[in-house]
Image (tube, rainbow, N blue to C red; front, side, top):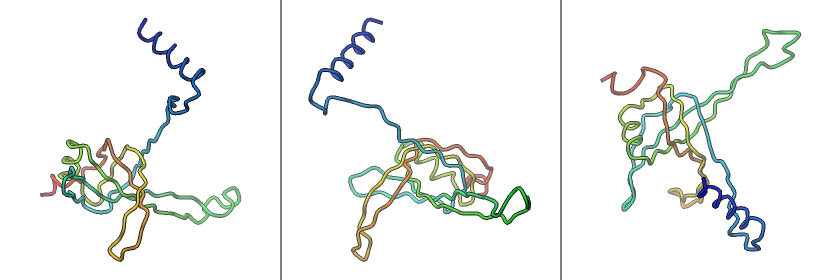
Length: 148
């Protein structure tokens, strides 16, 4: 209790009396949950000197009715599919995903957003958004290990 109280007083002291803004630490959240279907079997890549990463694509769908729902409840249904790139660096999860995720599997992915740049084969600078997964929940029996 005393240790918690001392830490709390220190944080308040730093926050209110310091003119050095680098000492002020604020909490923030970068959290993503995606529920959808896997678009391709995962691949494992490794760049020299770095840990391997498992990568797969995932589709989420958004559906809505067009027109006035009150006057015509059977209006046209529209759908938009969004594709996401999922990367898994966590060693245990990376290996399980590589072995068991399969194209068409329904999964829930939890993680964080990451933005980066890369240079493609035509030497053009591109931006990429990736979900860095730290948890995957398998929601369908359509996994690679059971079909083989």
